[in-house]
Image (tube, rainbow, N blue to C red; front, side, top):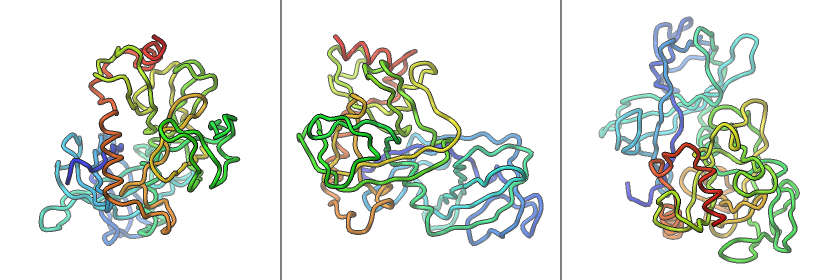
Length: 334
């Protein structure tokens, strides 16, 4: 896979961490859709530990395990198999994405489970749904950068407007291309758990006047007046999840969250609660969220924009500091 493939990491379990305690497949571990049986009862092993599944995705949506993955074989192909619905006693249903790793002859080599809400050991989960159609869209929701309901976006007139009141065609101020019209607005309501739990950047944390709440992998644009992180450049992009410090930047776990995605003719840096933040980027992962008529970005344009983002995004090893958010806040002031 080329260097222009996008990189995304998600928390996952091995398929072997989930096993059938009762049902047609009793004793078997979690497998792909063709091998599953409805109403089987699963449990999570007490020894199970979630790991980081690092994925590379090309413009066509093909997935491959990245060199820095903690699970699976780096370089192996990965396929989105299905979305499972599990039901436990006295709790709401839980969804689990099933991804399959294959070898060079397209044989199944490993199975990964991506719970979209935490699974608890010693709890019985009944398999009540196997969905092959919407799994890619669910993975796109995990990968897509999103703002939350109530976020104030700077419009073309300079007015701050709640994101839920915007419409396609409305004008928004962008950092690089002035005033641009919104091409499409996406909206999903999800349980705010795991990789769907939003990150809250409290007022003042990055010199913002109000709290900004975004999806975990939403990249923020920071202009450093002094390069305090040793990035070697003044302009940097940083994922919200990498700023979490437990005080001024936190994770909002629990309940539900309304996520909104803003799409323009090209990837943009816009202003949300006074913080420069990216708009939706269309690639092989996120295209599943779009209507067919909007999936027309050329591979060359997508690759160019991805190169621009990679050149600005801070690596995790550059953020090995007690409080990167505070360092960046001070760096942007002087």
